[in-house]
Length: 200
Image (cartoon, rainbow, N blue to C red; front, side, top):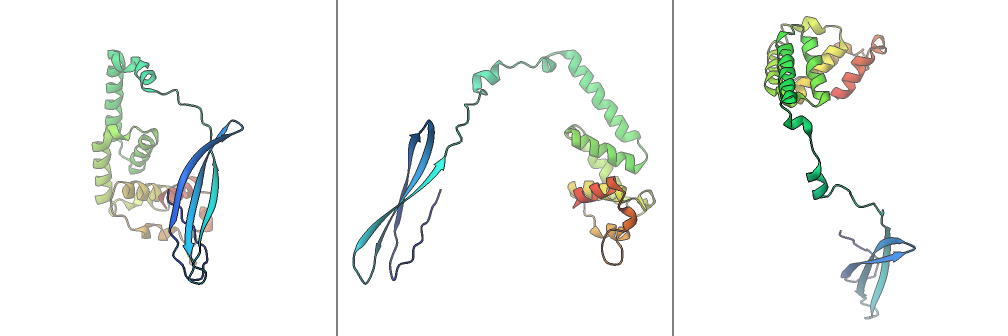
């Protein structure tokens, strides 16, 4: 950690030297930064040493119980049992079929959003990328499903932007009034406003 001390001297050079010193007081341990600065003024030709201390409290955290031996002693029965692996594989296939069978674009986006929020989207990256690629290319021709729907527009905007697709922010101009604020008729569309907030 670098610490600089600036003082106002008439015409001088200020070399600064510092060191950390640890000490204990009433059961608490502290670290103290000692700063020595020497200055030589043109008018006095004297050298002065200044001792500035900064006391920092220690948080006194308890030692972690997660040492190497403890972590190695943990067991996970779900990884070794074949029935759990088979169940996991079947569930992944069901979700893949769901992604392929859903026709409504809004339902597809909601499914992708749910998978991301659950932290499971890494299992289905190829399917998600394929779905979003199809949505981004068909965005102009299939705009009817999201017309007058702030939630659908914001969800599509956010998911496409998160995955690196270029989406113009002008998709929200339909939902703005003449001043540039969101139309007052959309004040009760909480899902839409929340998704627009997340998209921003």
